[in-house]
Image (cartoon, rainbow, N blue to C red; front, side, top):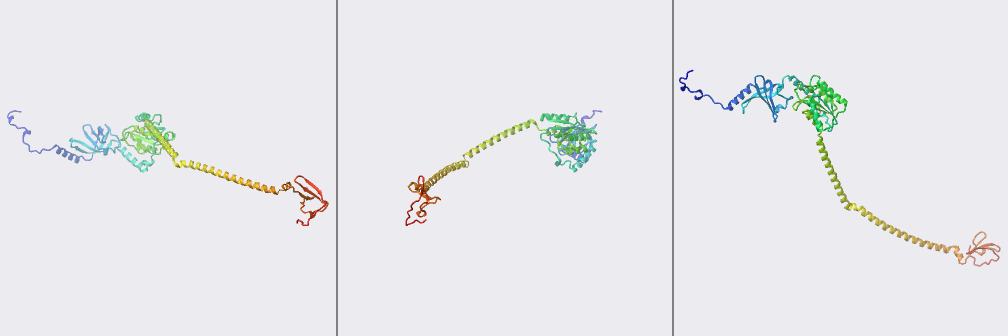
Length: 421
């Protein structure tokens, strides 16, 4: 290529342009409008990468295949409806809208729904069984049993080698050491897992030594957790006489067991915290209650002592004593009056007795005899008061003051003025 005349050539970018100049906002807005119209509610399959759950509840991640990747966002309102926990490397199908984030000029997929590939039928079965059992009332709150506040024995239905068992034991021993734990080991994944879980719950009920059961496992995919979505497990949980805490997977995982159980715990560790109280908190509560009880009793005793003292000083309490003293004085006065009255009556009776005695004494024949008189009777004891009643030769008895004289009448002096007999 020759350099001849190169000084006369004007570069293209230095030439005056007649083309329209777009602002960045106009370009991104046009791209946004075009993409949103062309890729509305599309279904994309790919592998999750760089998954992050923001503190706001929004989900940020990428979906990729062998040659490309696409940024995705799922807003909090939609992420609440997820029934599984998305993780990096999981193959999923995403329904969403392609859009442009104008501030950064970044293309992303506004996710409406996520479905793990290969689990679509499982999810459909899950929803069908969930609706069926809900219609039958197995999820109703009226059937929920209360969790005991202070269980003595807890039955565990989980894998003996899983992290869930270690977490439960660790939390219980830390919070409430000394409690008895009975493990009924089962498979928590696989074709026989549901039957084993169901039979383990039945066995612990028949054993009848547990106050509470915890069933569950650690996290996993919907397929991994499927044993806890089986109808046999759900109905066994519902029929259990022992309260059950369901602790399956992570906080975002929901199973049929969670809905049927008396309490759903977001994790196995959380189930242990729900199952037993914290002994340190209990001790502090007891000490606080003890202090309150002592203060209440002391306050009550002080109040009642003050009330008693007020009553002692009150006229109402002194009144009975005053009345008793007044009545005692009155009784003494009445007694004295009665004694005086009796004395006067006695003296009067004594005087009357003396008078009567004097009268009787004056009338006593013996007293008359003492004055020189005598009493004459015939032999029959009849008192002779008239000489005319006698004839010479009659025998008479004469009673003197001292002694008796028997006589025979020889002479009778009759008086003209006879005393009538």
